[in-house]
Length: 351
Image 1 (cartoon, rainbow, N blue to C red):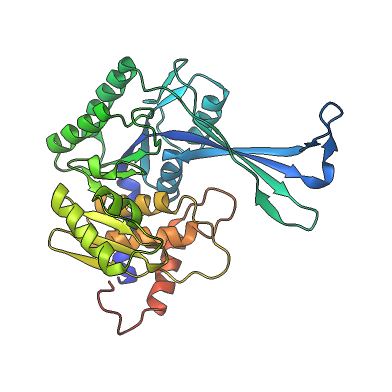
Image 2 (image 1 turned 180 degrees about the vertical axis):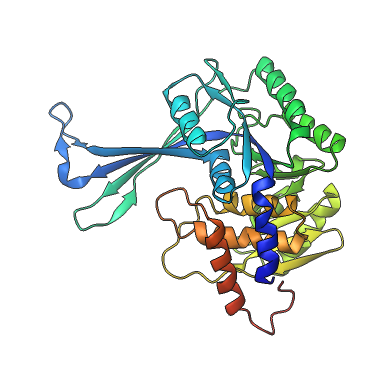
C-alpha cells in the first residue's frame, strides 16, 4: 500500500459512523503498592493496598476506543446494569465522544466488569494478579431482547457499518443472543450497503450475512476441525476460504505473529505483520484489528487493504502494556512506513 492510498482511506474516517453492538465490559485496574502491604489482624493474610483505581470501557468498549482514536464516529448499543460500574462505563464512553444514548440501563442486569489487580513490586516490576470477573449468570430476558432488536432496526439505516462484539461464552447470557443474531442477519440482508462484521469467541460460525473476523483457532473450531498449538498458514488459508464459502461474505483471519489473511470464496491473501520490537501485550489486539478493518471497508478499501489497516492498528496497540491500547492516525501512518521498509521483495502473496 502506498502512503497516499492510506491517507485517502484515513481521510474518510471522520465522516464514517459505526454502530458497535454487543457486550460492553468495564475494565477496572487496581494499582497496588507492595511496599504499603499490611497484615490483617483477623486472618493473618496480607492486605493489598490500592493506591489508585482507573477504569476504561472493555470488550466491545475496546473496539469503540480504537474507533474513536481513529476519528470514526461511534454509536453504542448494549444492555448494562443500573449500578456504579454502569456509571463508570457510561462516563468512559461519553469522554471518548461516543453516542451512548441507545444503551439500555436496567436493574435486571449487572454491568459486566473485569477487575484487574496490578501489583507494583519494590524492584519496579508490575504484574497482574488473579482477575476478578463480574458477569451476568442468567440469560438475557426476552423483554430486553425486544428493546435491543427494535433499537438495532432503527439505527441500522443511520450508520455506515455495524460491528458485532460477542464476548460472553455462555450462550444467550450476553447481548448477542440467538434471537439478536437472527435480527442482525435480517438487518444485514435488508441493508446491503452496510458493512456488517462479527467477532465472537465461541460462535463465529453461527453468524449469517456478516463478514467474519476469527483468529486461526476460532476459524478451525467453527469448521469442526481440531486445533493444535500451531496451525500451518496453508491450513488457515484453506479454513478462511471454507468459512467464506459457507457465509458468502469475506473472512478476515488473524494468525498471530504471522500476520493476517483476507479471504473470499475466490481465494485468500496473506498480509504479513508489521515489525514490532520489545515487549508486547496482545490483550485487545483482535478488537483493534476489527476497528481498523471495518473503518477501512466503510471507506471503500479492498479486502487486502482493509486487512493491512487492521494489522497496522494492532501493531500499535500491542505496544501498550497494562492498559487498553489505541492507535491514532499518525501512528498508523508510521506503522505503514515500518511495514514498507521491512517488506521482503520475494514474499509471495504479500500486499
